[in-house]
Length: 348
Ligand code: SF4
Image 1 (cartoon, rainbow, N blue to C red):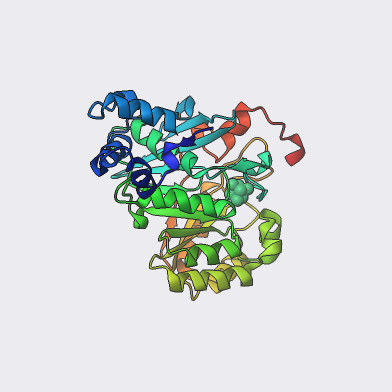
Image 2: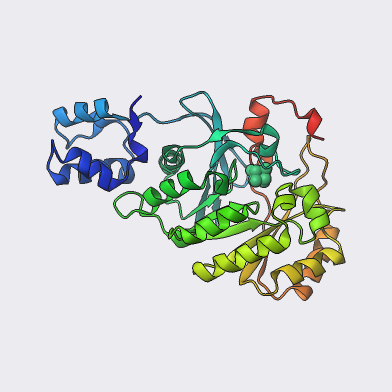
């Protein structure tokens, strides 16, 4: 099987081509792929025909197929992609004022089984390869006339469970000769994989970190996110303090608001205690009721009163993020889960 061209670092490509072609040819090739988003060597018109056929025999240029596109009333677009082995993933483009955020997947399914998440119900099928992450960026760029301004690893999967491949993809995404995408506009979101947080901090790759916290009380977080039984809050906190020392960007704590679960005064008190000495901002996201999950969205009054108390109790910047694409199966993994007709009855 040929190696995918979209996982090859520019220096590897130059080294490979140097025996046959002058150095500027590899720059031309990179420009076709990463700037012009042309994925067929026969259409790279300033390359000699011999090089075009050499390239197609040396590398795999194929792309995942977009098998479904759903457009939300709020402008978000969700894409279901078919990979070469028949597996499927999702990516989402979310426009908002001057920003266009791309949300990518890092795994097919996920092993972490958070109780509020559609992807978790699929279990883990496999990790994505670096080229499959880069391909999501390339395909999404081709699907929009606007420039993608932000990249978030918040789609299917836990990125820190596939850290090596995520880092390889990020190196290509950030490389000046490839996609030249800004580290300060890239966010990895984790459920709290502590060894992965240390490894990411030490990797030298700069990105923003978001932690899906959802409760600062072990008794509640244990139920929402089984990962907490392995890496409880005190252990997670230590890792975040370490990350903060090594990385210039402020951490984001993501907190899904679930009615009757994590919105009491007690919860705010615990959140204040957890976040007190972290340089972070806190992002509240009202949960959206899903047919196959046992949780309820907060009502508008409940939400208002919680936010008022939160603003009084927490010194950090607080934001409220409404879920995007509610009308297009907006929850991460929902589209693939529903298109696969995976039985979720056992999950509730
Ligand atoms: S929320 Fe993230 S880590 Fe948890 S099951 Fe879903 S994809 Fe996995």
